[in-house]
Length: 409
Image 1 (tube, rainbow, N blue to C red):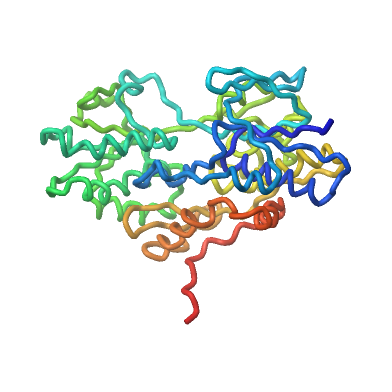
Image 2: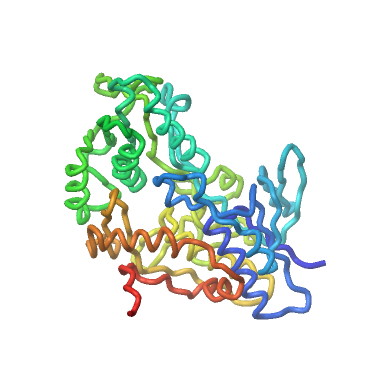
């Protein structure tokens, strides 16, 4: 019987784990090759970095054809538990429960938004964490013109001024202009509990970010928290109330709860702390990757972020290592010293930075061209298995963040 590599999740890390494992298996061509199986609700890749944009329901990429061509099996369902002693997982799909055994397991379930127990937050706040929730927000925004004019109808509050909060807040002016065709003016408020704007982003891009927020007339409330949310507004920690029928929560992420079932030290975000081989210290047949892994990216102490950028490379390494262990080959040591960010700042604007100190490289239209290349090309899955196996090499280098060059005439 063939050995089984199970990968939980078909996000960025899950996709590249599967391709990385299958690539190594094909290269070694063993007489009884291990089977690579991905378990996820559907063979699709949700393009989560784009969920601040309109048309959220379209922001998925099909993987079924690529999986079939690459020889990767897919099982539809949600893994609900892991049995480490028996090396099996329990899967639920449409009320049917089944189990699968594994020889190597890759945790690629990703992360999820933290929703604290603020009164009314669960019932009345929106988010853009998943395709379904971003589509729900979009439907709500499109329904606003049908409501009677009021301060609450015309006010949108974004809670959290990190990457996600800034991208949705700065995208909203153009989206709302297309929704309110009668010219109704919207009020956008960005709230953050920290005393400094974009405390996770660093100081270098802040002048450009602040300029865009000012140009878009987005109000910023710092050192502020939300005490409660209702259908018509919210109450702040300082006693102020804001009439708003739209509250978008973007603050805080945590590793998928299934990660907690794997013994071992976790960080504050619930990620399993692993070495550069990505193996779970207490379960050597289990690998953490993407948003489930707390791992150093370099020799200077930087830790991989919950980001597409790191998930893409972590996935390649975890899949390779899951297969290498079964094939008797040495494991690959994950390393990703280069780091860059590209933050969308609304219509025609963005900021691109390089390095962990986030030195600004591009702003404005140049940066926006980089962002559009990332969002529409770089992060989408390969179109065929031949291309996929080339880019699934764990030593593959993601292209540097540069504006696309015009085609030669």
